[in-house]
Length: 433
Image (cartoon, rainbow, N blue to C red):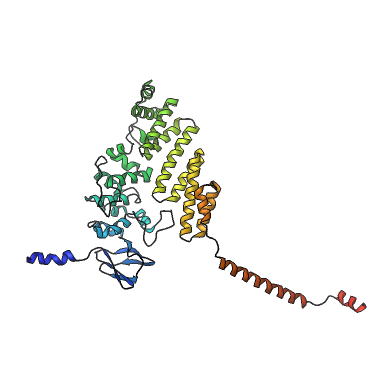
């Protein structure tokens, strides 16, 4: 072995990452990095922070896994090493997993790591973007929760929406590639992300926002297309040219036309946007339709469809309270049975999640809401069956206490009544006898 190789051997063998080691009945957790780790949990044991090079000894849990996250102010440095040893810490920092120490209320998406991302300084978040695919994917996932600003702008500038997504290797294989993560971030933030998407034409086209004049649906400045020529919209609809029909329908709506052809073209735009996952663009077409089309059941049903899709996305991401709000809005708007059913099921899921965590009061509140919507839904009945009942032993103890109290009160009342002075009328009557 050469001298240079001999010097490298200790470096290559040095432990990295957050090491967990069983030592008899104890678990030893050591931070082999150069950055502190926050919000650690090992079984039921917790720790606020673990400094670089420090160890934490606690009772050995059933599983030797430990969760934690990097402080966001130091995450830029940590992202220089996205190796497998740090994967769980990176994924939790990015919001892929909920905070290990404070996961928040079930279904509320208010875990400590998500709240930290929502409150991070824009200048800090803007430095997370880099060249490595894993780093970009982690930054894109964090952008789901970081308010649109420097981070989203940096991602849109660096990532080509037309590029082939890069599949990530284990242990990051479940993380969305950067392209998909950015798309989801734009749709999640909705109107707040509109200006950023419009500032990058490839991304505006990718999100269905490149239709001339569509941004005016939100009152945004831009070039307003000229009104379509007579019969142009009708011709496009008859010939099945959806692209032209949608473009001409938007132009006609901005010009104030109110014909059924315009409303049909705008409805076509909403339907196509929803089918392609362009929910923000679908909202734009709906806003224009609300301006120029008469209120109708068809328009309400289309709006409810958009809300339903947003609710389904929120449900899949674990934000069940947000999903319930979307389903409730859709049901109120159009009265569709599908929205009523999904609302009841979501409320029932929230009840079950709270029951699993032992929060009976919150679970019962959600259960009662679900029963008000649709009491006979199978999921609602499942939640009703899972409602915790009092322990029989506790119930017997309470009954015994109540009986003893009743006996005590009865004896006390008898004593008080027996000690009362005899009325004079009663004394006179006894003397006469």
